[in-house]
Length: 282
Image (cartoon, rainbow, N blue to C red; front, top):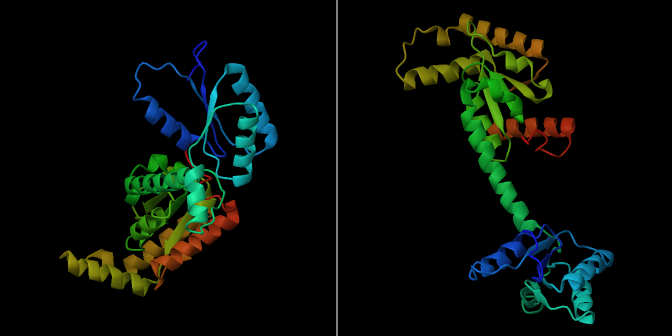
């Protein structure tokens, strides 16, 4: 918000981004619809030098300070600086912090921005699940380059459940079905192969999985879907595609979904580091 001339501002001073303090102050100011008080955020305050800079600004504009300092030492610096310069200040979290420290004998992490980080983590997971549902079973193949993980495999290799499981931990996953006779999306070979995983499975186990599905949905039991020679051809076809693309192949035969997910995450971490959001859309 731009500073109105001759109107003393309220400075939000925070060890984090200042979001909590700004929200609280604005929620109070909204009760005064005619106010013209500028609200200025001073984020990531962690040193006495930074506090001194802010004090100079406040003195120059005759402003006041509202602060949400979690770090006890930095909060004490700020309060002392305000009092020695006769600056009016409002401690938005100090009294509650002191109460929790003294009465409940709890110790804070002193890490700023944890609430905002928790919110960010939650919404990342929501976005990951939405992305994964929108890119299930070959949908929107033109946009799979924005996925953190791409799974490819023939029918009944567990692509969808594995995708959803990974998405619940914040990974954006696309899965691409491999069907002989059906064109493979070119984008599968244009994206970073280090993010693509080819799922394979033993022929016996795959036929058992498919036979169970045939019975469940009343398909013709004589379908090529469970015919051993056709199934073998599908698996070989997929294996050749994985080799062509240089994709990491994972055999999911008899493996719990958690095991396969952990295997993928371990591989990605070794390739890209611990920042799992490295393919986040900007």
